[in-house]
Image 1 (tube, rainbow, N blue to C red):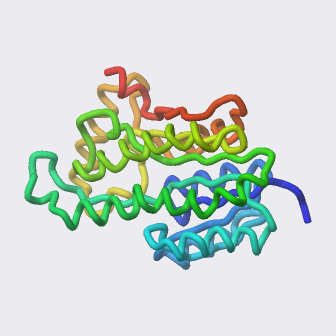
Image 2 (image 1 turned 90 degrees about the horizontal axis):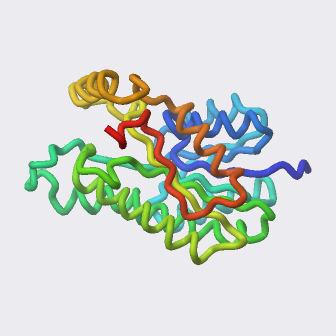
Length: 246
């Protein structure tokens, strides 16, 4: 068996996750593709990559999280990289307090926060056996600014940032833990919220220093950097075309 590294990327059947899977695979990393629902797309991506398998699983379910990690071990005998990309939201105006009800908070936190925790908990014993273990959490610029698809979503990503720093302090030196905080990225995420997408894209294009929205490849490059940044842990890397300085 090749001793090349193995990466498990949650929510990787499309969008940012698929971009990360392709980027890491291009460097010879073996990939475990995952999705909670889009099985056909996940299997198609796994077949496209040089050395990949697909596992269906929902990060919000603790047993499913363990199953996904075990699938990586069963397929390749090791796990070196965990990318927590799976996420969810509801598009709720920030001033709609009633719309951001308890059900919305629970749904978003179960995936975006508890799901990340469950994946890390399941993966840590195996990552400790690697000589180059890295966890990268996909956060959002909404974690640090008063914006986002909803208040529960923004708060969930703030929790991911703090979790990243706390775990970096506890899992080192054997495991590095970092996060990428994307701004507006052109993905299927906005299906069903096209008006929100168009207005946000227009603002970004006109007002940010790089004058464009981001792509999954932009996030994938940042992820690849953090996977290999041997002296970096506890960092949250912003990828937003400069919006955070405007």
